[in-house]
Length: 339
Image 1 (cartoon, rainbow, N blue to C red):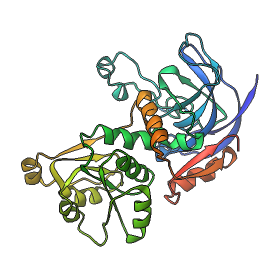
Image 2 (image 1 turned 90 degrees about the horizontal axis):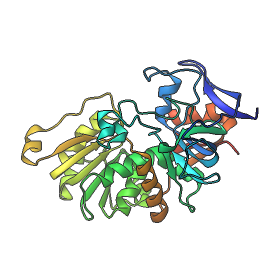
Image 3 (image 1 turned 45 degrees about the horizontal axis):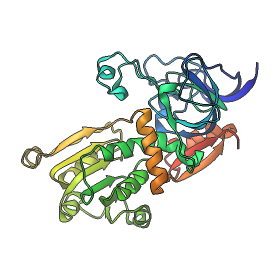
Image 4 (image 1 turned 180 degrees about the vertical axis):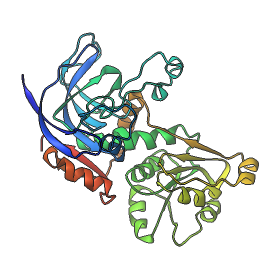
């Protein structure tokens, strides 16, 4: 049987190890994908450290996958061998739980996640169900597409569903793996884009990404600075700090909304009177479906939104993973199996 190279975790807390495996056969309504690029996400630590309930080992991580359809399983009608596809966090759904019955597939009680529920993209090949596939624009490179299938879709989807309109003040809290994409999307969507980060040294990058205004959270009162701009219709919190969110939330304008996509163990303090009188709200936002991924990729290709990436060959996956987890990467790390 033909072989492939893959990087797996054999047990919870174990190391990333490079192994040789049989190239899998796609079952019914699944496709075999030749992986061209796979982004490394902080959520991959759920697989490596065994933090997801019911996770079975050995497991190949990776849920930011750009590739080419290599083989079709039985029952596939709308996909072709040789077609470029992407697979993101939403790797399948049951179709019969209450959320699925209402068409809210991303909140499926039995949702599948590549690299957690089944083997992901830290490999030369992987298998995915057809409902997890997103079509890839011809003019979007694989290495640029991969991070958009998690960090990209999360920020893009949150902003486009936020209720903000072109011309509204939208603030992006944090300029990191998610935030540097959020600033670009906010600018391209026509929002008055405000970037918020620690230190004035990030101001040039914020402007380069498309921010109209920059707030240094170390030198300025974030809430007052936002109110001076008229108040934010949306604050997209990509920073993983409840304290930073609490400091910014007073900057919401009338009908303003804090949308949280950065995970923090710290609580967020809400100014209750302001929230009542200003009809403010707080909302969490997960990723999105394959259709949302497809929209994200298409918008990014049309508008020129690109992630800032560092590329590594599959043979250096462990090093690449540590680079991403250390917070030193600028700003996403991508594995390229063919490199």
